[in-house]
Amino acid sequence: MRAVVLALTLALVASQSVNFAPDFAASKTYVYKYEALLLGGLPEEGLARAGVKIISKVLISAVAENTYLLKLVNPEIFEYSGVWPKDPFVPAAKLTSALAAQFSIPIKFEYARGVVGKVLAPTAVSETVLNVHRGILNILQLNIKKTQNVYELQEAGAQGVCKTHYVISEDAKAERIHLTKSKDLNNCQERIMKDFGLAYTEKCVECQQRGKTLMGAAAYNYIMKPADSGALIMKATVTELHQFTPLNKMTGAAQMEAKQMLTFVEIKNA
Image (cartoon, rainbow, N blue to C red):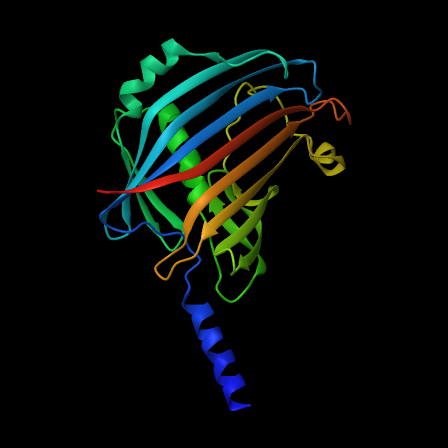
């Protein structure tokens, strides 16, 4: 009986010693493959859509305690303007060339126990390019609780401070952690938005009570490898969807769809 209790105690201590929060070791450079897609239009196939796609390598390395550098290597930008999904993406050579100098500049960010802090970038980096970096950092934002596998919280991110639902499971045999989180972008304490072209419009409170014209949600899926110092993100996929229905029609919603994929490649000695 004592042996069973001792074994259970050791197993519990071992499980608590594993840190599920992502971490990047000093003197190492973590290489990832990154792909992002942004499309706008109506949801039905066979209709016109427009958007962009970015493919790049991402390097993450530590420069000080809880301070890291993020750099994009060989980024390529593609444009889409056609009938979805049969028309292909077209390389945007001029846009890629115009932004190449800015993409080559690394940015600095604070990161501790899965939470992204301040983001620092030189003035030479435009808001457009910085938003690409913010999208990658938004993937790294993880508020992991050691004592709970299912929980909800108000989490800060690129969209604002919004209600977020976490589900965490561990596959001990495969040495993998599976994490899923979903964000309700209609339930935010502080939602980051920018309205433009609405100088002469008035908000209709009764209309908002009947049905919101702008709705959104985001879903994140992670596969991580556990370690004593901190988990390694092996693969992360993000899907974010915003629907806009100005005339409150069930089938007349225009949508903006954003997808991101971050895949681990290798670790290099810095």
